[in-house]
Image 1 (tube, one colour):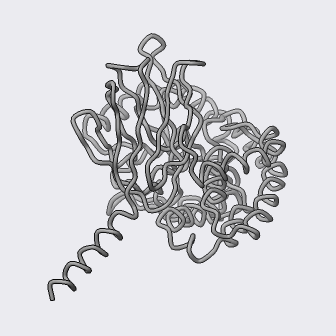
Image 2 (cartoon, one colour):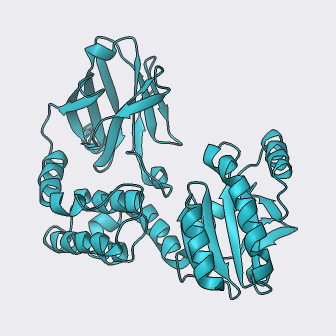
Length: 368
């Protein structure tokens, strides 16, 4: 009996350790300062699809909600934790002189022992000193994608054809490598930087059942499904803020167009652009264009601040407070200012992140 218990204990220990990782960080130029590690810069609620655990120590603080780690740099730095499959992360540094930060290129965190070196070359640079399967594949794949990536600009409007051409190459790659978690994260990266494209759906369908079991795949598929149904030509969903307040199809039927502005009091561009939004309302309200604001605030003091800002700018349209965070759930809204144009049938005509000039052009095209 004791032998069986010992064998069971040994097998449990081996299975338990299969997901462990250890990351040694050498960063002498940042000693006594702090570095941050987490998902690459992104939009679209991508942080929510990450799934790893970090052991918290005196010098390592893990914020699980945002999947980032703060490391106080000492002569010896080792981060340990658990990770079921490779996930890309980047290292960043906050520089108080510029009130901003610098970040490295992404690398894949995965099971086993790894070592990286961080230095101040080009403000901050990362050298991966341990060759791992995912990082080796990532380097090879990015070299193959260089011509496609050179035509795409992060967080800007891109030609949809350029996105589709890259995805066709990735689809061919996935057919040959259906277990490639690196290819999966490349699609995530494209969505995050270049916004939604229907070709992502076709790319995701090609992965093996093993990849499709991963938490990150399942959660990303949910995001893509929402984007597909609430993007341009999709239908605006019913959004309930409380028992007395909601946006539904009936709100659109009396107007040629409705512009929904999603904003927050923490968003400086939102507040700066509000006078322009007021001018747009004055310009188009006689042509049957209605405006609705949705404020991403649920604390009393922030709601009062939002009301003050709206009143100061003489906002004459309805504002809802998204106290239950329903708007991002229903529309995958993850940044502001976000403007969504909806026709009288509840169909989404345009969806733009902080680009009032383009929204005005879309309104003109529709009403004129």
